[in-house]
Length: 316
Image 1 (spheres, helix red, strand yellow):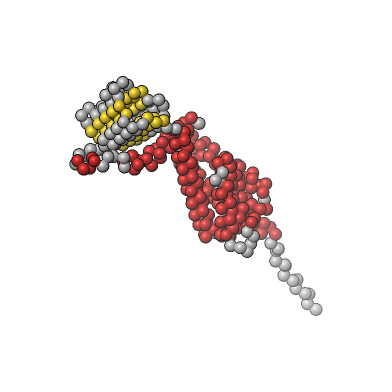
Image 2 (tube, helix red, strand yellow; image 1 turned 120 degrees about the vertical axis):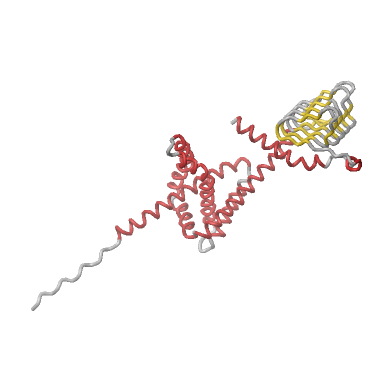
């Protein structure tokens, strides 16, 4: 759990940084272009940025790692996670979202100093602008909402396209699955729970054996497609409850899909709705497949035998 939260946090920091780069680069003073001085930008994902004494860079943007400025930054310094130490000159703003900020004696910041924690400003250091505090939680919350909405859009587009594609190629099979959902609720729930949890477990078990490694890898890679198929089946079944035949199955699918995607916008319900729809859809597919397999056997048993030929009448 801790690892997942850390990865998620780094992803949010990365998204924030990517969105902030154009803003930061726009902060470079226009006088730089007029003087003809050519400098470079320091943009680092993870590592360390050092501006040595006598060196001049334009802007510094670092997502994870420390920043040390002994020379000159003609633009601004933006640090998302890491310590910032300045003994030289920064003509623009210095912004730190997470980490300590130290201004040594003789350091100069020509713009604002924006930090999350209280900065250490030694005697003799100068901040021309104002010293402000930033709330990293609010900042992260905004980008977390953006990332969540982006995931919602991606899932919505993929499930919509996948479902419409299946209806276009196999409309009768899709209607059979929807009928199974309405007529056989109990078996659909049971099969759905077994498949939803059983497929990943079976894949992991297969990875342990040398012979089953290709099967396990293929199954893990195909889980996203399998789960999407189950979600699409539930969307059609829900739509058929509201939109009866002979209305087009496409309209029924759009109705059910729209309801599920609107409910998925609720943070508390989104995960539960996805699980319920996916698992129930997998169960419906299994029940419908079993019904198709039984039909030929039932037809063979119940088909009447041809009547025997009439006995020839005895000759007079």
